[in-house]
Length: 312
Image 1: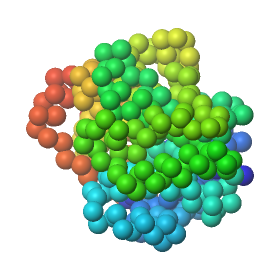
Image 2: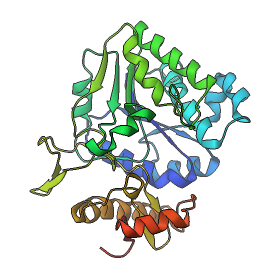
Image 3: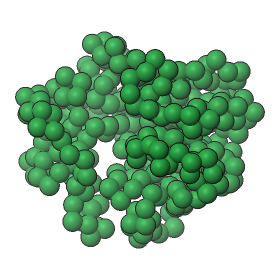
Image 4: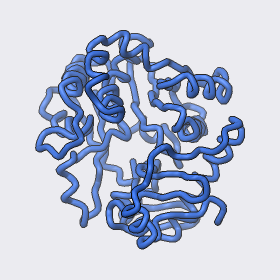
């Protein structure tokens, strides 16, 4: 059985809802497992999806893999969530009956069919996603050549060997301090090709488009297209922060300015969808819990890296 796994807490419920609906627009998409990090997200998702997805409290993962409990009190919330990533895949393969797993970050949205991703992994044990940093951002490869936005693993011996190694390394450290060998859960992916087995690095530039690799993307006939003419299949809204009246998009972190087309035809509809989902769930607003520093606010204003939530 093929399955997709993702996760969220109460602050990311609306993003998970948007992700799942974008995947399920492809009627042949695999079953979806969502790990929930609190009671609020569990209850909200039960109401929103009813029987269309499977919900698993993430506490079940730490109960199954006790070493996760040992590190929880010693790490920041973000570093602990990074440590969970390979164990989400392990749990689905070992306890939920899956034989193939696609891990997908909750702040991703599919604009094309998920089956396009499934076609790419045929014949491979593992598949990982390149950051594809823009030419001016090549220095960021020091944080890892690959992004954990989408990871595929099957239940083959070689895949399990890689997965078990990744899980062990994440137990050792998921530090986000600059380091030649470690950055969260993602820099370990650079080592996957050192193992035996068929490991695929997705080469399609329309996969996992994000603020760090969108240079030259254009909108043609109502669709976003990459510089090599590949259509954008899914977008990663990494760095997006939604507040009561304004949303910061996350381009200024990379000293970039989002184009008008990206702001109007990609981010504005997505934010509107999140607000609509929020209303359906009777939530006050999909407001971000993370604070934005004064310096980052000024930079975002300078780069026009924001939109009013009621502007479009």
